[in-house]
Length: 358
Image (cartoon, rainbow, N blue to C red; front, top):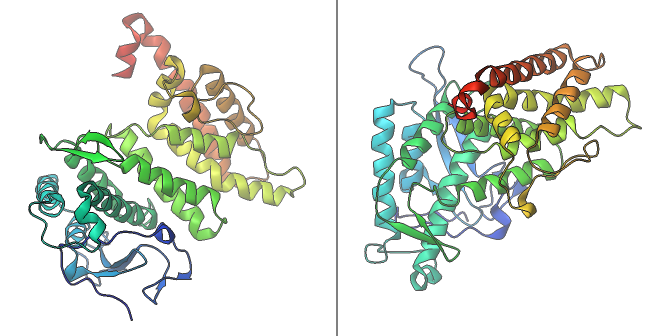
């Protein structure tokens, strides 16, 4: 029997098996292709809009139906594509919800007695659930079919990050400002990215990685959070890794048709930011610097040499006749954008590099 969560005060502790389930039966005894099960509303406010609702959220050991889950209720309000003013109100509502459910003096009921003994555990569970729900939604609703959903969720995260409170939360023994630091968000992004790029490649995983990448581009482009490290991931797959030399040209073209549009998207939207990182050098710790694919034997992280290599590879792919015409065009446009960014930097260099960044 599926267990129904009967109170909004419960935030189930996720099990290790529930980070992602693709085409598997989980403990709720229902097929769970993802953590969040969405459905499209039969009636939309305008012909050009598609409004979705969360039908259920499943973390493997419980089902949280819409009427019983405060996070799902709040996220469904976000999925109605509200105004910025309403998003600000929803962010404040989430802040209130956090204090009601994670303050040991206010919480009335928990699902695991370990949470009672360790208040910080409730923080981890709360943020794990919040970010997992948001990321699972954006993976399903990408640029082709979200009709603004990703933009709204990006604005919602911005509103959260701008909430000014004195509260600090302790995650894994480290104290963070409550909303300014968006606790655990980058860690959850990393887990999703690793799963989608390292698990068995399916058409669904491909689409999810493309959709997630589009969202990370938005967060970086909007200045909400610098996630340009994932641009290196995209470039590594598209530009620094050559398909197996024994593969047919058809297989090589399929590989490029999948990865090159993602890499080109990063250049189109955040090319200035990426070039700035390459020009200034990155400040990643050595153990966190993204390495290169088989075609790149230079230093890890951002560098001007790596930027020039990426541009040369885009130019090469732009002439690869076996690739789809759209892929070649995107590669050629990426080269043009990279050339423009370089010229723009040199044009304003007399006024200082900070002018370019602004």
